[in-house]
Amino acid sequence: MKAATLRIFLSVHTWVGLVAGMALFIAFYAGAITVFTHELGDWQRPADTQPVADPVGRSQALLDAVLATDPDPELGLFVVLPGDHGPQPSAYLYNEATGEQRRFVLDADDALRETPPRTGFVDFVYDLHFTAGLPRLPGSYLFGIICVLYGLALVSGVVIYAPTFVRDLFALRIGRNVKRLWQDAHNVIGVLSLPFHVVLAWTGAVLTIGLLILVPFQSLVYEGKLFQVLGPDFEVTPHVAEAGVARPMLPMAGLLQRAEATIPGMVPNSVDYHGAGDANARAIVYGDLDQRRLSTAGAVAMDATTGEVVDGTQPTAYSPGRAFLYALYSLHFGTFGHAAVKWLYFVLGLAGAFLFYSGNLLWIEARRKRRQVEQPRRTRFMAALTLGVCLGCVAGVSASFLAGALLPDAWAPRAYFLVFFAGIAWAFARPPARAGHELLWLCALLTLAIPVAGAIGSGEHLFAAFANGHWHRFAVDAAALAFALAFRAMARATLRRGFNGDPNSVWALPARTRDAPAA
Image (cartoon, one colour):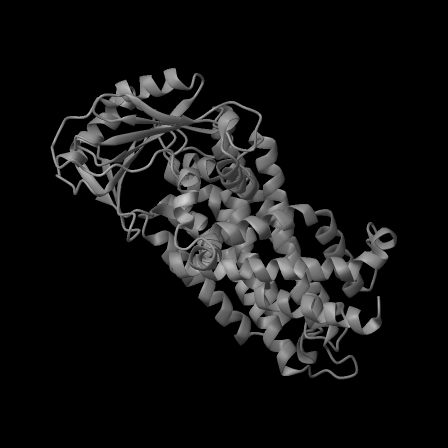
């Protein structure tokens, strides 16, 4: 390949990485954590929480209470059964046209209570993964565009690295040349995890801006009928117009029994009602099957008033379009393969966060002036921004854990944003080496406090969780301790480099402080 062409690809890879890298760091760090969304819910709940004695009866009581409020029949009504999503059922009234939702639960006295649709630190960290803290709709669209840039960075990176692929794949040269060590680590992680990154870039773009991508085809190719063609792949059964006549619906237990008889082995997890309380009401029971496929979701659509089965679908009978759509979700979120795949996605997600963090550091190092102490303003600015955004995100996520364990649900996002923006401000106020050292210590201390907050909030400490076999709580606390130790080691290494590294570097400490002992 010509040198000029290679320089073009290098420039594309560098600038696309800089533009999208910090947002992708947030996406990968938060995404790695939300692989264990259900397990985090178990960690947050009190240790003495007991499963509902009659989950179907409790869900029916919630449904009856919501219907007693006389909601508009045109609104959808979605009931989540007790299980992976929590020990108590929840119900959502939603408007498909506007996307508005209302969430309801039953309190301890069986009274209906409305709560925010997205509540608690688990939902917040999950949303952070694809919005970076922006409002949900614009944030997801922004991340769709970032995923396209992400794919461009992957392609350009492969082109750059391909000529030396075999020679340098496992070349991790550890020595005094820190830049070369980081470059080797960046290249090795990028190449070894390339299939994972290709999948995430592709699925992320489709899941966030897929409908926008289809708009030109809707108007220019299919003459406004594209979504009619795709409808059967998105819906189990078409909606039926309301009759305008009230009619009682079959009890939920009867619907669940018919669904399980229609698809043997399916474990129901939710029921979606359309036109609830109307003579033409439909109910779709969703569930999971124990099958070795990318997607294990099944669904049975019924007449909600008679229980007559209208349609059903399961992995062995998916249409090509439905199989493609469901596979995207499974590949992106790692919902196939049980615990082994979850841990693999967790490790690869953290490695991806390191990839974007190290890419920024390499850009900074490549542009420093080696013969002068004073570094260009652009390198100092990028160093401060990288430290503030990336380490501010890490510290903010740990702070949201603490708020989730100790404070009302509304405090989780507040704690995150308070720490996140404070981290950015601190990074710009301090020399980069000092800021990195201090922010990493903040990450270590906040992460170290997670097991303590979990013990206070749940009433069960790390060792009690292990003794009682509460593995989710034990795993979260143990992982937090390991992360805290890692952040402490990184903090010490950052300060050590500030004292002992190249003095003509943005990471060097000012000369007047270089004789101070490393902490």
